Image (cartoon, rainbow, N blue to C red; front, side):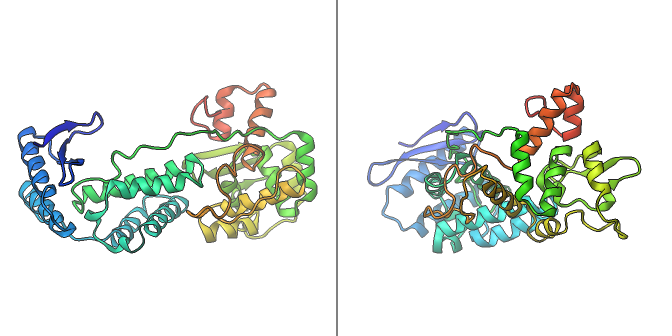
Length: 360
């Protein structure tokens, strides 16, 4: 006989029952009422113990949903729901975040193959688990878990919209983080080596990164309107957190800026090529790869292919970003220099836009 169980992280009862082959199955009842959940569990078991096609089993679930919720479960495919979900998220998130959502959804759709055109209700926890495990073979745990988090958001929205009655990603656990990316500050000789091989625009980007401690994407999107040479300040709104920052221009950076040709239009980008890249792609990943090539040319990092890792293992693979130097290390360098200069922790956090002492 079917029986009930409740996961500590869920308010709904889980139906546990046996199928025709005697294998135990678990399925959410989507009910918080024990009596109602028991009836649903028994209906699941009846359906499972008969030789039914997938369509017939789904019909049982649809009938239960209508009986419980008083309305039909809409018929929506995974690909069509993703399209509507992305359109809904577009005005709510940054371009980079939206690009990440789209990329994750496309990877999952690719994994599903032709099943991506089937109704959302036919996707199971095994689909999400299989996708997670396949990614874990070639990608870093952090990347896998980010993709899993995105899928959870997507399926949660589908359940909220009553497109599905249960979330197939709900109890799929994150992968264990086997290694942590270690970032360290640049040394002076390393900075000199990078500047020696960089072109004029990248030399400027490196200086801005060192003397402001800001992220690559934010520096790429700077225009001369953000740079107040009279008052010695840089004003910007961070793309990641939306914080408004007013940064004093350090003397070496001011000397560098004063050596540059003047511009007539304040909306002119400080770094035109980098600005165009982020404007076009909505993210700074390509710029990170360019900087990695500069570090490789300076002998500070091993040169690696910049092709994205696919599910069959082609591309950068696990741990390509772990350890070593990156543009973000300039942010750590700035923090280190400020602290060594005796600047209070709270002031350092405010200048670089950190939310906590632990992050700083």
